Amino acid sequence: MAVRGVRGAVLLGADDPDEMTEAVVELLTQMMSRNGLDVDDLISIVFTATPDLHCAFPAAAARTLDLADVPLMCAQEIDVHGAPERVIRILAHVNTDRERKDIVHIYLRGAEILRQDIAQ
Image (tube, rainbow, N blue to C red; front, top):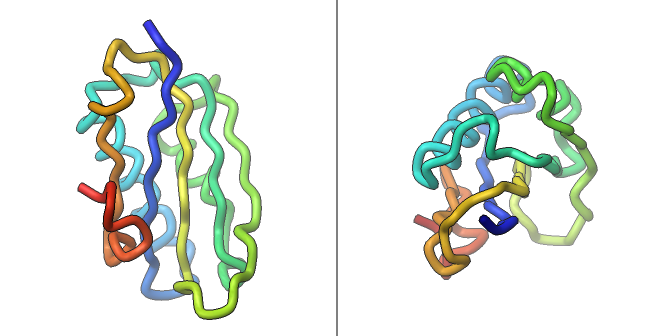
């Protein structure tokens, strides 16, 4: 078993706590299901949010998935001129038997523009 990183991102339509919760849950659920993961496979998750998102912590949304014992951390994404707004990014550290090349990275709701080379 190896430790791998699983990436994902989602764009929000507005700085709204309900939309953030829905989007983060959707993203994490797809990241886990598409990679054959369950909660016990999660080591830790780092969330970043663009500076224009103030409504809630993405990690709080993730806690609705019963991740009580998984370490979660939020940070602010760097403010790069011209970068997309209202973006939540996720880097999940996981235990998996998958090879690095077989990891499925998930980009939703327009976030595919961030990594067209790996977006599924």
